[in-house]
Length: 122
Image 1 (cartoon, one colour):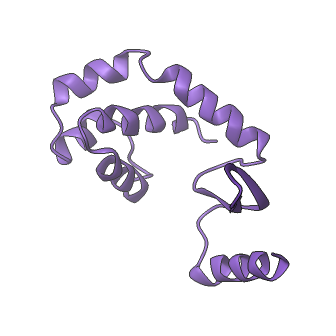
Image 2: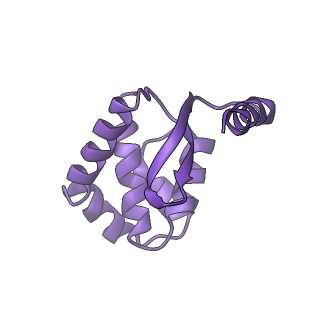
């Protein structure tokens, strides 16, 4: 995880508070070399900047972000983006099987190969 990963996660959650999670998510991925100042991104996607700044200064989302990080680490994910491919159990949709993970941006062919491998094993 990079040094600004936690704040980037916080920025997306603070944007989500205003209904713009995906807009912030896309903007941060498109501007990975210029993440700060965070409020510049908030302004660019039309957020109420004072509300966004107050959220970023708070610890409102910190516990949830740390919990997500722990789950990702348990699954062996070391960066973003990370992808989890699995089947849900038709008898119990809370259970998954045939799990495989992919870390990092990948071309379509990589996803296709993993999906085909998982379908063949099923």
